[in-house]
Length: 166
Image 1 (cartoon, rainbow, N blue to C red):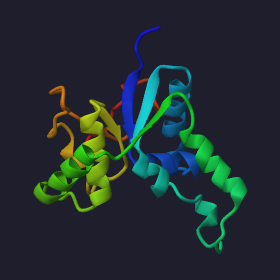
Image 2 (image 1 turned 135 degrees about the vertical axis):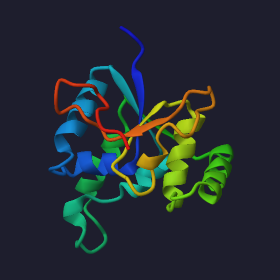
Image 3 (image 1 turned 90 degrees about the vertical axis):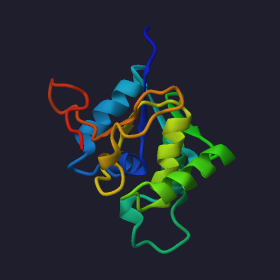
């Protein structure tokens, strides 16, 4: 079997998948199913584990939140084709630098996601964050020199995997 394609998922992709968001569900499920088949590995920062802290249906629920729903969230990130990586000091420092120097990068969390993808040489990032991330497509390089393509996941047709770009 060929080596799987590495894809970085920003938190909004995880939330779109776990919550079955109508406008994102199909594309995310196709990518996710292909990852289950070994075609892709889905990489993310451990920060996404915290950001994916509740299901949409729990938004108005008082704490403590359901242990049953917590298990759903925990199980999501504990699969062999999903690669959550820790935020190490080098990633944190790079994220801080990216946040301080990159115009239109308004959220420090997105800087962490960028720094993580770049550190681990994950050349593709799926996100729906047009304001902070999509405009940076192909402007940053991974440690191995490869440009980071940041795009919407798009497998709704028989066309290219990454049909929509910023």
